[in-house]
Image (cartoon, rainbow, N blue to C red):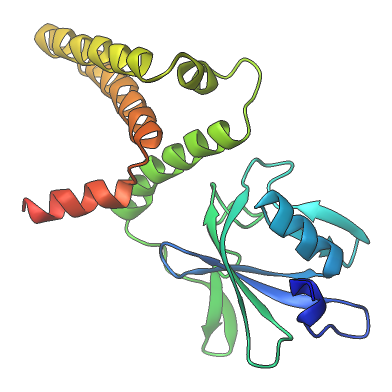
Length: 213
């Protein structure tokens, strides 16, 4: 018996799916699936839902590029709810918030949660860029510079890292802050490309840095 046939659906043939960031454990959103959307999710490796309002299937990220790559699918004790752990590219919510659950109950009112420290928000940019690079590898786009680098291979990537490192040195010697920022950003991007190519995550880099503190 196929996986989707073993689940329990409501009278409309739907089952709720809780979407969770597999790295952080944060709940990103809740959506509905039916047998066909579950099959498509398993086949494509991306979350595919059934829209109750539009009465159609939709792949998360099909318009925004904020895809959800499935890492694990769990079933609750009654087999009538799914927990899907994903690798989230960009924001999960259509409001451009990382999670749809950015509001909470407070003194009888619905209020927005306090934002995480700005330093945390900015640090997440690196992860977002990393995730976009991963997405380009899985879903090549014509004219993409990232895809060009992966087509050329590791030697080309390493050559660019060397070139960008040299540009950082020159910018620093010139004492031009704007030029330094620009070249460091270029260097970081190309380093992220190498990490993706080698299958190394940012979490591993953070762990290494923590060990050196």
